[in-house]
Length: 181
Image 1 (cartoon, rainbow, N blue to C red):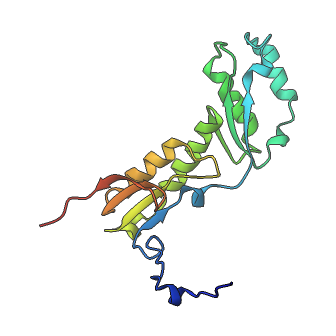
Image 2 (cartoon, rainbow, N blue to C red; image 1 turned 135 degrees about the vertical axis):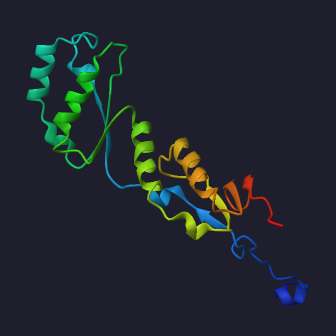
Image 3 (cartoon, one colour; image 1 turned 45 degrees about the vertical axis):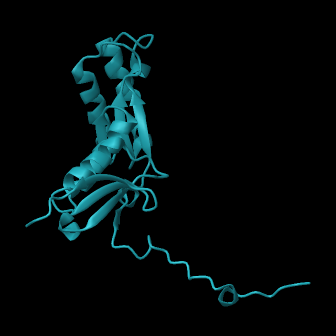
C-alpha cells in the first residue's frame, strides 16, 4: 500500500526561516579581506648561522637579493631565530622591498593581516549601522585575526543597538545599548 501525502493532508504548518526574516545585520569581516599574496621575509636567512649580523655581509646579501619576487605582495618582515638584530636591519630590508611590495610591516603574517584590516576598517562609514542589531560573523574561511574582530566591535558599538558574535542561529550577545527614556 502506498500513500501520496501532501503537506496540506498532514495538517503541517509552514516552516518559517526566522533568521532570514530577521532585522539582524551581518557584519562579515571576510567581505573586507584584501586579495593578494602574503609573505614573510625572514631576516635570519642573511645572518651568519642565523644569529650573527655582520653589517658588511648583511648589506651585500640584501644588495644581491632579487626583490622583484615580492612584486605586488603584502610582506611581513621578521626574524625567526632568537638573534638580537639591530632595528636598522628591518628598516633596510623594508627599503629594499619598498619599490615592489604593496605593504610592508615588521612582524608576523598575523600582524600583517591585522594591519590590513586596521587600515580598511578605519575607512568604513559605520553610521549605516545606526540603531541596528548586528552580528559580527564569526566563522570564516579566510585568515581573519582576532584584532580585526575587536576593532570591528569598537567601531560598531557607538552606532549599534546591539552587537552579537557568531552565526545568526547561535550568536553570543556582546553589547546592548541602553534604552533611551
